[in-house]
Image (cartoon, rainbow, N blue to C red):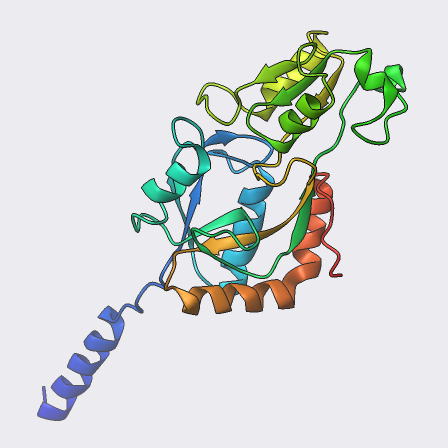
Length: 243
């Protein structure tokens, strides 16, 4: 075999063994059992949003699973995961959060009243008269609790510690509504605010100092808002409308 042939064979072998480097993953923090937000089976709307964002970035999706509940609540979740560099982004955080950098909002999360269709209650606000006559379920330590307290309706209401108990999720409140334990549910969207604030622009959050990822996510939101809106709409989430 000539020297030229050997060089060609070696070059071919070198090309054949070359492997392209794997793209960096989009590392997402999420609760493994907190529907309708997220679960480990990927059924929540946060899961679907994460999949769409990873696809738009051309990166594989990688999860860090951790409960958003327990002592310290959502802030402690952020400290244990995002701030500890176990992941790089959370898909659902109030816009302007003081602990993390947030992207531009991509939807508005708001409180709603949930009740059986057969009841046909006429409820337009926390001041609706029917709320004084029924048993209302709410999540503790939220604007809904403050609103009920301000109106003297807390004693007849039922509190759920969804935000602090790892054994519960928003589905717990819906089950209580279904079995008649409560008549009306006021689910929380995992955001605190003033006592009479019931709607919150929601964003994606990254660690302080990671402006590079923040800008990339902003670009994805700007270019793929219609796709994100479609995902949210399929899950019954109120859409974000810029003011």
